[in-house]
Length: 282
Image (cartoon, helix red, strand yellow):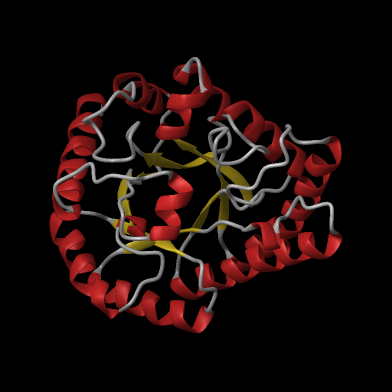
């Protein structure tokens, strides 16, 4: 098991000002970081890969698609842009040395039609993801498709949706992730949900019900950690928390108020919490 920290707590685009944060995360004891990939420039991420190697931090990546590049759009040209953007993000992962690309890159974040997914949208999503998965294999990256709660997307809202989607894509490089925040909203039984996805689970986000410090809210942490241990999960446990650093992300995640003292304290407390919980079960 490895513990990571999602850099979206600080930024959506790494720059030199974040080097002290990265150094501090390493000093705290994090095994790696999750890099936001929105400015899809492989050259830039190759440089960050070298810097993170020097710091001794492994990395995963997170990305998302917008309405202008929606992989399930009725417009074929828009769908093509979505596939191309996902493949470009995979090039960035390869350049940075990120082994997993996580996120809701299956459809447009925060875009709704007023109803659930149609058969065509599902078909388009699966067809596009097969192309992305083929590119992921070439890049030696595993896709960790993420379901989001009903207020953030409508294609994949729960574990059952995502398992069916991954099965339909039917590619070894297309797998899925589990997020405790979204599961807290959408799953009636988190134990059953984790067991349902265990054959495809490659990544986990540790995220509190209010998106702040894990362990200080209402997520059913005991049930989550118990079940992850029961299935023998041994991948990343990555802290995902959000603040007010990114106005566009704050708007998407509906973060209107500060819910922790400092980012540094959140990171330290989250790491201690995960280590304590995992030690109880292993």
